[in-house]
Image (cartoon, rainbow, N blue to C red; front, side, top):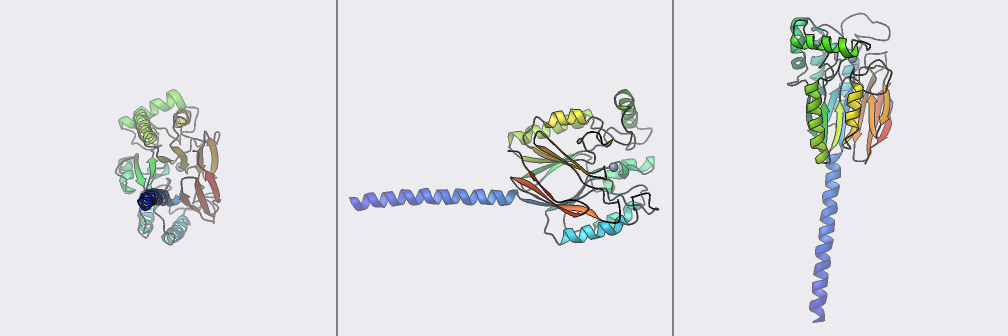
Length: 304
Ligand SMILES: [Zn+2]
């Protein structure tokens, strides 16, 4: 009788222990699955043209080459370029896209303002040059969700002058944003509704979300912000799932934190003779930025 009791007790204990071990194994697997290694570049802005101030346009192709080599050796999941792959002239796409071919890791482009510095007749083709089927979209890397925005949605540079989008953009700019630099842009109403919907879905699933855009919304006062940055920051404040907004455009770089969301501006690759790019490690607790060249290394603690 005693033997039977002790056997049952041992059996229950074993089942409980096995259950716990299995649970912790699943948790460990989940954690490993949530770690993402990312390569980030901003404003390569290549052009076969003379330097202008700090902008060394021809040198960008060498810097891109060296970033590609570093990324290839780094066991990354994905590489992001945060906009302005070229400075101006559609012919300049040939050489940077050729260099991109050497990358052995999937790469996603974000649309920048300079990417549209092509003749009016070619503006609609820019997303396809950069391998984009849509101008804004979301995708997953492991358990992390990335929302790619088009800050040129409402803009005076991204649409041909005779298109309805240009006429609409011009009206919106003149009515609401004429005190702001005309080289920036805004998210249009349809994109904002889409963004809200994406965030609602992620909030319900308790996901980790990173937003990618060429333009910053914060910090204030840099003359580089999206025209409707206030509306966007107010929207993001409602969502616990949003961990960071990553952008380029302001070559000097920048950082702000609002409501636990990290707003990071990566430095422009085109500036100066020293390179600038980064490797990011995203985990449940922290985003580690390992800076290369002028980009500084830091750790951004995530809000819970
Ligand atoms: Zn830009």
